[in-house]
Amino acid sequence: AQAVPDNWQIKGIDDFDGDGKADVLWQNTVSGDVVIWFMNGLSIASGGYVQKGVPHDWQIKVVGDYSGDGKADILWQNSSSGDVYMYIMDGVTMSGGGMVSFGMPNDWQPK
Image (cartoon, rainbow, N blue to C red; front, side):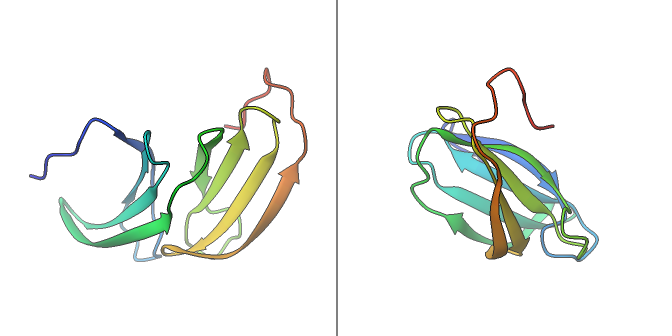
């Protein structure tokens, strides 16, 4: 087992590479870095950075296959502006995406 420092939080578990196995999406609460571990059962098969240095007001809210390609995508929300942004993912690579909503009120939370 691998110890994970306290400043890394699991933000989602879903299949990001389309192999039918759940993978783990992490975000660092200090640096803002976002990483995916591609899993093979209990073992980390590989992994990589999605993005480094994400500003702290952008938070990962939900992961799921929004594009229908069999790979999980990432939905973000800006805690200051309320803006909602989608990353369409292909493994650790953002293959598309865009703004979903501008200025969503703070009492509305994507789930």
